Amino acid sequence: MKFKALLTLLLAGSMAAAAQSQGYKDGIEYYKAGQYDNARTILLNTLNQGDTDKAMANYYLGQTELAEGNKAEARKYFDAGIAANPDCGYNYVGLGALALLDGNTSEANDQFKEAQSHAKKNNEVIVDIARAYYRADPVKYAKEVEKYLTKAHKDSKHQEPSIYILEGDMLVDQEDFGGAAGKYEMATGYDSANPEGYVKYANAYFRVNPQFSIDKLREFLQKAPNSALGQRELAEKLYDGNFWKQAAEQYGQYIQNPNHFPQDKARYSVLLYYGENYPQSLQVANEVLAQQPDNFLMQRLRFLNEAQLGQNEQAVKDGEAFFKNNPNGYFTANDYTTLSDAYSAVGQDSLALVQVETAAVKFPENGDLQQTLSSVYTKNKKYAKAAEAYDKYLSSLEEPTLNDYFSASGRWLNAAATAGADETALRSAASAKGLEYVNKALEGAPNNPSLYQRKARLIMAGNNNQPNADVVADYAKMVELLDADPANKDAANPKNELNMYKEAYMFTVKYYQDNDDKDKAAEYSTLLKEVMDAQNGAAQ
Image 1 (spheres, rainbow, N blue to C red):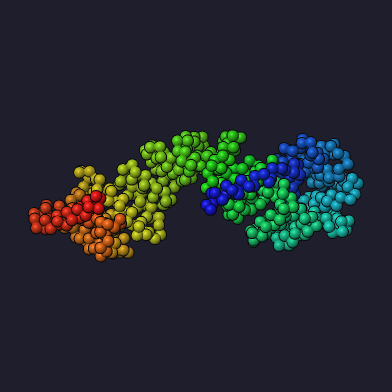
Image 2 (cartoon, helix red, strand yellow):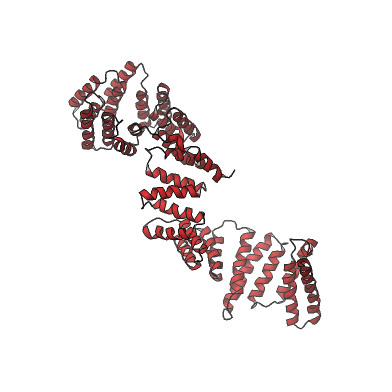
């Protein structure tokens, strides 16, 4: 089954699975995973929902601000959390952390005591106090960090997961990633659905063993299928690991979660595009643009998808808007060539040429672009420029193939054969350049009759499109090589080469007629008649 069709089936079967979210708890998970901007976004979006624990939501909003040095904002949220529920111990930890940062250890101690009085059996609060000391100054408060971690170990009988998360984070700061991973794994051992444990464990191992990290995140989602953090992290790891098809499937699930982020929907569109699922990619791009009309990437994906779907008139319209609306945008060679192809498809070849010429100026080292430019010049009958562009393409190749040389000789043949009557110098130079390439091809394929045909044509083009002795000699060599296989002259053979024989005999006859050699002219006229009779007989 083709990848496009397979991807469509995978997505169709996965959309319903992740339609629910965990509300504000997703924001807490993002905070604990160290993704503060994402945490803030979700916590603010869900703060006034009916099932939100406002004391806890405000605490983690305060912590996100504190982590980024915004102390005034942090205090506002901690105070709001206490106002929402003065019996929630967490927000006193936040105020204590602020006091530490301000150098007021006495006030910090008072706040931490108050926190513990409201959370006598909550060992996570104890660990958060240890983290507050660690963040304030891990050296200055090393004893306090150790004191509270020891207390948490003792009171929980070593079973509080957040202990191992903090210990793992401390090892990460020491660049002991293996030791940190071990701590994170211990956290998941004491809490089989611990989000930060799984995510941080996967992050620690990803550079060493991407598949192992991916498998751990899948394991977590089996236990917490509605976790936006887990869904997004798995999608990101699949994306970073170049597992395009699986990443597209996972993003398809994740963006159904109400707590997804707009930039992730845009990435989903990109993955669908590279997976050749152009209708779905276009649909997602349009959905994003409905909310964010200035989204540069989605403007690009919209017209790229339209071009792939053959919607060329719309691709031209949206492609023009894409360039016009983003005068300072970073455009790729593909942007220009795609719009060029769309112009060409609607019959605007001159505008198509402008796009490729612009791209060639912006990306002079892009050899493939020079090849494209050569083709567009050929379509616009600018044969000399087409040949020059193909030369630049060849110069970008480390080892040109025989076919590359043959194609180059064809570009120069076009330039020589179409040169005007007053362009003798161009005709001669183009013929010589083409012969240079066809001779290189002959070095690798000396028994290829098509190369001798090309050589004869090039010599004739350089001779004002008139045959001479060299032309006749090359046609004779071509015929000799064709005669080695009788099928080439067999009219019943659908792959016969009778047209090549006809061309050779026709110009040979003309050469001998021009030189008053009636016998030779008659001899080749007879051969020419035999070929034409064979063709006519086969056609009847």
